[in-house]
Amino acid sequence: MGNKKNSIALNKEEILTSLEVETASKIGNDIEILESIDSTNEYLLRKYGNKPEKFKFVLAETQTAGKGTYGKSWDSPTNLGIWLSFTWEVKDKSMMSSLSIVIGIFIYQALNKYTNTKELKLKWPNDIYYSNQKLGGILIEQFSMLKENPNVVVGIGLNIYKNSCQTNYKKTSLSEISEVKINRNLLAADIITKVITELNNLNINSVNNLMLVWPKFDKYYKKSISVKIGNKTISGQNIGINFDGSLKLLTTTGVVNVYQGKILETTQKT
Image (cartoon, rainbow, N blue to C red; front, side):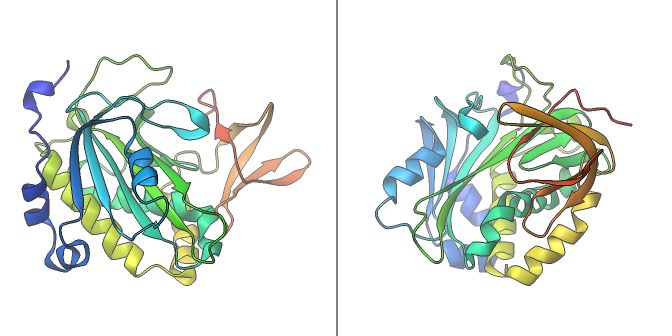
């Protein structure tokens, strides 16, 4: 199955020893490696559902029922990707609506040293692309809607090695686009270090600053796009995002703010 023979097994000790010292001190020993699980997100939701805790990480070699957005499945072939989830307490619930964008930018930055960032882009609201091919995605789920500071599970899926799973979209893997040999344990450590460092310092001002620089990451910025919202589709020019993470679409009748939806892959690139 693709590059499986080049894949080194996930190893907790290698990940922990590869973390930056300050990061390691914040999570202690709280990384789990599972051979197989239905979903890393579901695993943490079940385990910490009654008492969510901060920065509990789990990685799996495969997911049998990996989750994508809108109830879709996420292909998670054995030993061929990073299938990672972690818990976090959001400091300010006003940041919730833009969190997937914020996490996307952090993952983009963690991948900087592995590939050509000119071709690496983010697709609103939660996908990671290289050129016109999907490299990964983010899924954020909430433990409870009642708390002032919500607890969430952040799921990150990255294709690391080429696989033959059939999808209805073009996809790629990090090993196909990188000139660097990929060690999944070192990459996992890079991602964990990045998210812990950035999330510990995150506040509403830093979120707003990230929203301002979003256009340089946006795969479809200033492009004509179509967005599916429920059973309807609207079209217009992508003119950026608001501070709450909603997409600004310039249509023939004015600017429409899109809070939930999917940019269709038939979107024009001109």
